[in-house]
Each structure stands twice: as structure tokens, then as C-alpha cells.
Length: 218
Image (cartoon, rainbow, N blue to C red; front, side):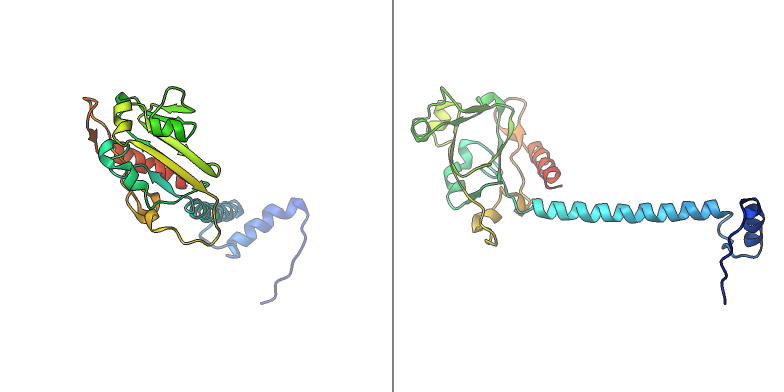
């Protein structure tokens, strides 16, 4: 079928439009050219939405290269979690994130300035105090960082953590420790929230932490 393009004077457009509709040049599913335009725009919008989802998925995959360490695993920041054993075979890399889950009534977590304060559990002049009950610490540079319980007795009982942060290495396979409980890569169950009595912990913190980590990945 030959199709001939004709330029019409503006005054003839209504007649041409009516003729096209009458002879089914425009599919009967559409009542007018305007309907066809709306369908075209809707299709383009849907395509753009798919593209945005693809880009978002790519960003989430890139973010997945960073590891989120829930300090102490399921018990969280507590003497019972044996933080020293938890961190023994774990590697910390620039860009990783630490999550401390603890009872705020216990005094919190103190980041201290060096080895001496760390060994002596001296939290008198901390670099920073964390007291929210759920604290995020981003590892933004190489070097050692030191965290102790603000409660001297608990710190003396082993509730302290030294983190040696290394530079990222391209193409490196994640260390065995990164797949253990407490890392985001292994879909961890973060430590629970403090109970109403201020002592034990409730599993609701698990849900809170998991939601936080999923949000960050996106």
C-alpha cells in the first residue's frame, strides 16, 4: 500500500482528522489523536520507570561491595557476645560500616584515641560517645580504631573492640569471616533492642537493624 504525505492548511485539519477516524486509519481502540498521544506518553513513562529501576538495582549492587558488620553478631555489644572472638578472623576495609546494638542504660560505647586508653579501659576522654542504643560507625580511612564499653566493669570483662581498617583491594574475594553471622552479606540478624527493664535484649532490634541495612543498600 502506498502512503502519500500531504501538508494540509490548518483549517482543513478537523476534516482530515474526521476522515481518518471514519476510515479506520486511526485504530478504533482510540477515540482521537489525543488518545493516541496519551497512550504514547504512558508507554514512554513506563519505559522510563523500568530504566530507573535498572539504574537503582545497579546502584544497590555497587553498594553491596561494602560490608556491614553487626558487632558481636546476634547478642550485639554485650559481654556475652565475646567481641574478641567475633572479630578474630574478620577483616575490616575502608568503606565498611560497624553497627553497635546495645542497651543505652549500660552507658553506651566510647571510641577512644589509642592503644593505651583501650588497654586500660579509660573512657574518660573519648573521641566520641555513642549512647543511642543503635549506633552506626563508618570506616572512612585506613588505620586502627578503638572502642570500649563506657562501663569500666564490662570493658574489663572483655567488652571492647579494636578495628584495624585496611585499604580496599580490587578483585579480592571476601574473607571467610565476612560470611559469618553479623555481616550484611550473609543477611544477618542484628542484635535485639533493650528490654523495658534495661537488662536483657528483645528480638525487635533484629528487625530494626535489618530494615536499616536494607535501606542503606538501596
